[in-house]
Length: 141
Image 1 (cartoon, one colour):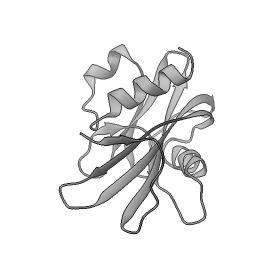
Image 2 (cartoon, helix red, strand yellow):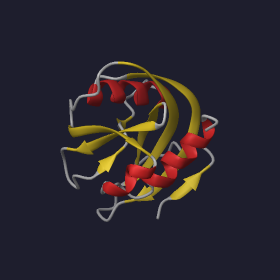
Image 3 (cartoon, helix red, strand yellow):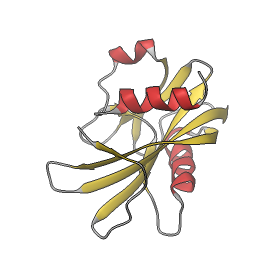
């Protein structure tokens, strides 16, 4: 299980990433990764040089799904090391859907809008359910 940090650690050797929980009424936007391990997750990816985590989350959302959203709050930050030894720090954000028809683009194989109750039908990345539940709470629902 990943550690949840109160702030982003910017250290050499850390892969900084961002993801976004986009809610459209009672549904959250999911993407199925086109690369291993081919699990369902939240739109997101690496933070590019010069980007803030928020900018990276919005850029990755557009690149992967064609959707735009408004970030409402910063969510959990996950810090974990993969079996291959890569250390990731992922900044998660809670956002409200603004526009666009969700479609699989970039490194997404599929996209889906799903209710929180329906998440059990998906093979999600570790911690995705708790990150989504936390983000939903940040939106006041």
